[in-house]
Amino acid sequence: MTAATPAGRPEIHRAPADLDGEPADGWRRLVAADPHGSWFATPEWVLSWWETLGADGPAADRAEVAVWRGPEGGVEAVLPLLRTRLRLHPRLPFTARCLTLLGSGPGAADHCGPAVAAHRREDVRDWLATHARRTTLWLPDLDPQAAAALPAAARPVARSACPRADLTGGHDALGSRQFRSTVRRYRRKLEAAGVAFRWVPPQEARPEHLDAVLDLHRLRRAALGRPTTFDARRRPLHLRLLERSAATTAPGGDGPAFCLAEHDGRTVGALYGFRWNGSFAYYQIGWDVGWAPLRLGTVLISEAVRACAEQGLHTFDFLRGTEPYKYRFGAVDRQDTTLLLPHGPTGALLALKHRLKDRGGRPAGPAGNAESVPRSRAAGSPDRPG
Image 1 (cartoon, helix red, strand yellow):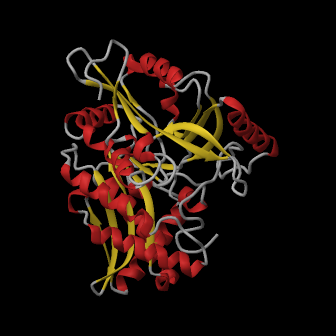
Image 2 (cartoon, one colour; image 1 turned 180 degrees about the vertical axis):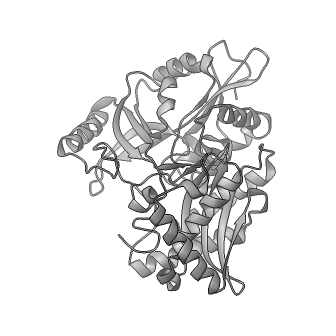
């Protein structure tokens, strides 16, 4: 951290421990004050990512977090950055040197972006434009509101549909009457078979709940013959999220939470996500495929939606991907945007790659948006591949 910074200039932190305590508290308050602030923009996510996925790789010495403070020392803006390389083609060795957001990429974060008070946007935008002047700026999966604090020269090159359901009308108002009737019928069948559902709030979340999701998700994907990146390699990140969240005093008991389906003392289904500032981000699911005939996956999601509505949350965020089952719950798309500001020959090639992709066209998602890019953690319906 620099000892003193002139007006409009940030402190620069190059170790996660430098941000623990007061800087992280101010950062968290900034994200919470933004009605569009996401769990993936909080210090819990970004610092946990840095300490795990980035601890032994390039992020260990190429990451930095810029912090702007007010006259009395309060945190007014936070911009986490990482210098990395982006492959130009999955089958070719060529890469483009990029400056990107710390915490994005591996780990599958959505609604990314800096945490910036409105009066600091110009300072952040100008500083980043200067900081990245010799490097391609690659800013993936940004919340639409984040662009106000980013260089105006950066251009959108991709969009991801992130469906979300409005819970303000209650759980029983979501989806068609026929869909709700079907879910109720299978819920009764599951209960008759001895399956019980349980919500695990953030203050009760434990590593064993995470391990249940990992194990059940792995078995389900193996049964479908499909690979997954949500496996033991991601476990350290999510364990650190549990640890960091348990140590904070975030208002409302926010943090990782689970919805479990249990039978004879054994967990047969587990849904994992993040409660934050009135919303729940549904991150991953796993369940015993032997319960597929009784639609355990669909009922488990329905029970998570019900629990969130009963807690007074206003949004159930399905995150990226346009799988049809999300829209059966009444979800409506919100678009995340990826911005690119190229520099040099490799940056020009990266821009060309996206222009060619645009000319080739993209399939429209269920909402009919030809610009949506379906990128999901778990393809298909919750109960069947598709």
